Length: 189
Ligand SMILES: [Mg+2]
Ligand SMILES: [Zn+2]
Image 1 (tube, rainbow, N blue to C red):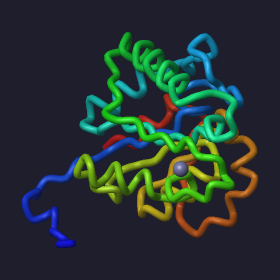
Image 2: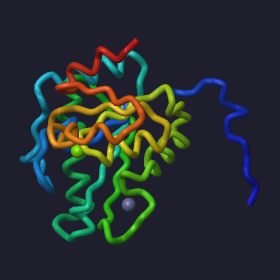
Image 3: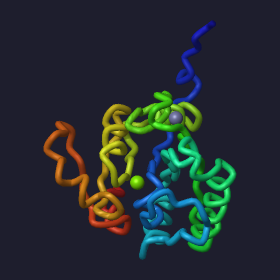
Image 4: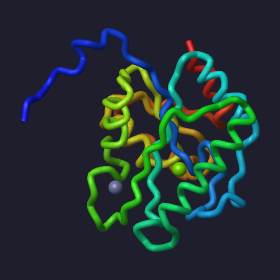
């Protein structure tokens, strides 16, 4: 196998706003599987539009172990994502890509967060400079994934965030904390 240096032809790298799904871009419902359960947080559409207008690619990075556990299917996940895209479409917000880990934790796959694998794959696919990008999440696995990928971690106090912040001292990397998605627009330079 020949290893090409992909960056020689790309002097320009993209910036991304990587986003967790549950508890971040939609309100947290454990093992959500139906479009009817989807609710956008107040101000989320406007906030993501601001990030998009600032040139950031919006990319979802989500663990969906409910598939591996047999609670719902990948087809259900697709339906939910179609609905989420429609709802955000009303704000002219478009998700550039969506990465899903459907595996059961016991599968020991490579992609499940806290692994940085999905971030790394997204960065390769879309020529993203992860160090100039942010990963917004509500769970420890989101923060760890960001840190391992050398991406800037952002914690929201929505979803599981109130629980996650209790153990923030364990991280040596600086983690920016916001009450909700609306407040993250402060990070746009
Ligand atoms: Mg989450
Ligand atoms: Zn996986």
